[in-house]
Image (tube, rainbow, N blue to C red; front, side, top):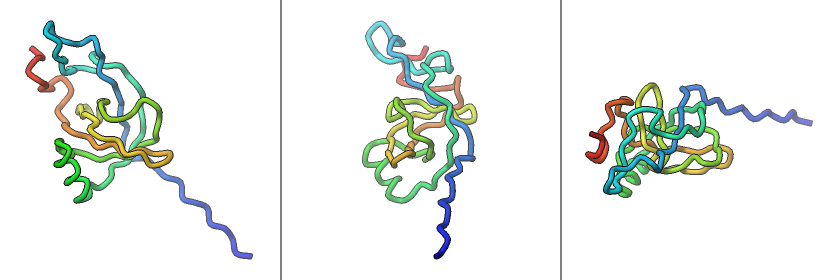
Length: 127
């Protein structure tokens, strides 16, 4: 009887991402959202290990079609509350999660942006 091979465990060893959700109380007097300038301006969701994934041609085309620039694509464990609209801080840079592609126990996050946290330029309402 042949031996069964063990499935190789997935390693997510490229880094750590802190995931946040923008706070709904941060608005200008006329209702526009204020871009976050620090982690204190957002609600913490989770800290997850991730692996950097290659950006395929069809991923880049999808991003162009939907209307964002694909800065990075990462793979991390799927947990509730993580999806498009969240923010990710990786190595001191702030990204917007523009799209989340669910894949069983994992999720692929398509990240847009990458400006250093504290130098975020938003919708013009951060002065």
